[in-house]
Image 1: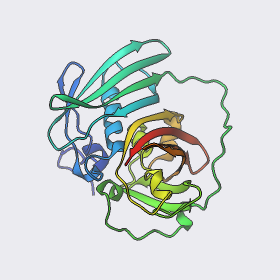
Image 2: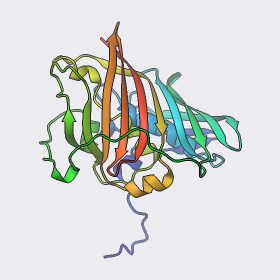
Image 3: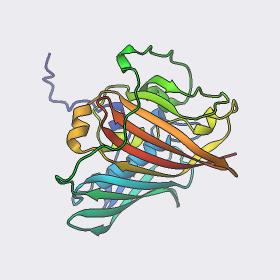
Image 4: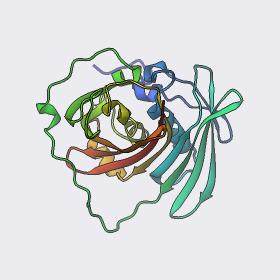
Length: 272
């Protein structure tokens, strides 16, 4: 039955969790959403999605995201946030924006966002999607208590290492999608680039304090390719390369089910 009340449709969880209220030129007010909470603060994927969304909310931005690098510099609590943006350079082919997240008197996170004007050029896939079973053929795992943000997504393990075990390799393969089947766009793709559990949890059976220090996302998907995915599962592949002196890295790739490389990501994490 059609809604004849005239009320605007309710926002999906991911959208309502990323509020932006104009505060002034290049300034937005926001608020942490506990539905996307991590161990002691908001999940990093929520933070980078908000930083990107603020740039895309600017009326004079041009192009679509091709890259972003975010530094997560401090913890966040539930007090109000301010996001400020600045176009460092706006050209005909690319634009470079900064996006800064502040709380109180401090800066908690900042990002450089690169927008590009996509055009018809050579198109080729050199990377190949791993061979995995289709999501429909996999058993849905039992939901257990854990970090709040994990409950906002559907996860289907498709192979690789087991968490909290001594694995020789930390590679994992997981089908993931928004729990409400929200259609994929660039902010959600940015968030999914941080959906991987820290790789150190696959190296030894010990939980340690871990935090992301720096994270880069490269957006390979075109708007048409995102639209083709819609609310379907994407395959998330992740692996670490080295653990040393309190830091480790991890890499990730996100694929559509038909083998389109949607995004790649690199992270540097601190651990205790």
